[in-house]
Amino acid sequence: MMCRYAVVVEHIGADYCAYPSDLPGCMTSGESVEETLENMRNAIALHLRGLREDGLPVLDTLRTAIYVEVAP
Image (cartoon, rainbow, N blue to C red):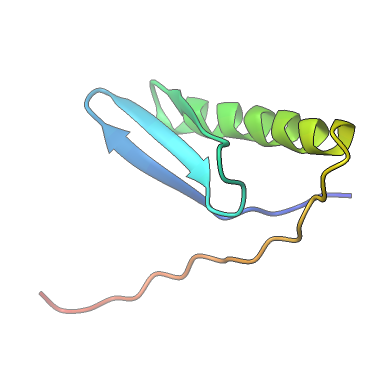
């Protein structure tokens, strides 16, 4: 079963940082967007496994991302 999480990716200096808004405390970084997203997949999987091992609930995803265009 696959789960989908909305992930925020930020460009910080020369690197990137990412976090899923539905999983507080789960974050990662990388030198490129691609590397950061691959690290994020691994971090989410590890985070979910830790929740299950600790007997904590794994909540459904609550958020989605939608871009809205506006004229400056």
